[in-house]
Amino acid sequence: MSIASSSKISPSLRKQFCERFGDRARFDEPLAPHVAYGVGGPADVLVFPKTEDELSWISTTAREYALAITTIGTGTNLLVRDGGIRGVTISIRETFRDVQILEKKNGHTLVRCGGGVDKPAFLNWAVERGLGGLVFSAGVPGTIGGGIFMNAGTKYGCYGDILTRLRLFDFETGGREYGRNELHFGYRHQSHITPRTLVAWAEFSLEDSNPVEMRAEVDRIIEERAAKQPLDFPSCGSTFKNPEGFSAGRLVEKVGLKGRSIGGAQISTKHANFILNKNHARASDILDLIQIAKTEVYSKFGVQLECEVVVVGEDPYAQK
Ligand SMILES: Cc1cc2nc3c(=O)[nH]c(=O)nc-3n(C[C@H](O)[C@H](O)[C@H](O)COP(=O)(O)OP(=O)(O)OC[C@H]3O[C@@H](n4cnc5c(N)ncnc54)[C@H](O)[C@@H]3O)c2cc1C
Image (cartoon, rainbow, N blue to C red; front, side, top):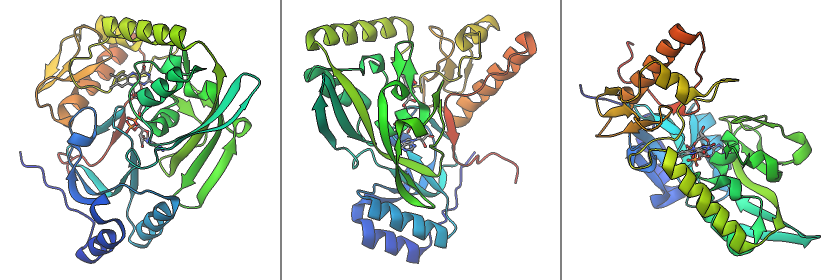
């Protein structure tokens, strides 16, 4: 089946993007190489803005031309449908990348970190300087912005635990800072960041710690994860959130779906909450496996599985 998408970027608008962003605006850009799963159709335009002024220009232009805006990080929790993303797709993973020490006081260091910074790089940066608090994130990929949007975390903690301040850019109203007590974080959930907002930077309070001990703990956690998780094929980590009182992976395993394949996608034989791109999968293969797992788990256990992976983009197979 051929997959057609119809870009919403007219030639004159294309010219405006080119004048403003040069090669930081890419048209009909295939998104598969930009996301961890390696699947998904093209973005009408993928832009790498450097400043909030540029974000404002994108917001105003998108409003004027009635274009949707979608933010992506490194796509480690993102499933882009095969039809791609209409409108403007923004990535700040190559641009909002400053890490600054703001203050050191009473054994604590306040650090401001750009939303585009890579989490493993930030963790390494902190460990090298003996700044503790981020060890929980060992082995979690993606950007800081994506991590805060998802309140990414592990059994050892989450970003909401150490965040002190946040700057959000709202595509309707512009930039604004939020103090810790204005924000609420839950399991893979937070209160203020919607698809209309972008995490420009976040501040964390990190405590003085022993770098050698931290490095050993990071290595231990990474080893522990590698023993349980199938890391040799592309995935988005956990497909489903754990329903209250249950392990999503166990439920999928108990309905006998470990190893089930559709097209190039497979429910991992090692950990049933991981769906892998084993061999040139399409997004639709992964989505079909997600649907089968939801249906089977609901019919056997009455438990509704909710996706942790964020699904975006156009379904080219949908009946119009
Ligand atoms: C092998 C593997 C293991 C993983 N393990 C874990 C784990 O242990 N714990 C865990 O929580 N997650 C885990 N994940 C999922 C993923 O790494 C995290 O959710 C990560 O925080 C996503 O970051 P990202 O930059 O890739 O965001 P993306 O996947 O690109 O985007 C995810 C969501 O965040 C939004 N977003 C991205 N950047 C921004 C921004 N700057 N501002 C506002 N919104 C933004 C996107 O619009 C999207 O809705 C794992 C993934 C993989 C592949």
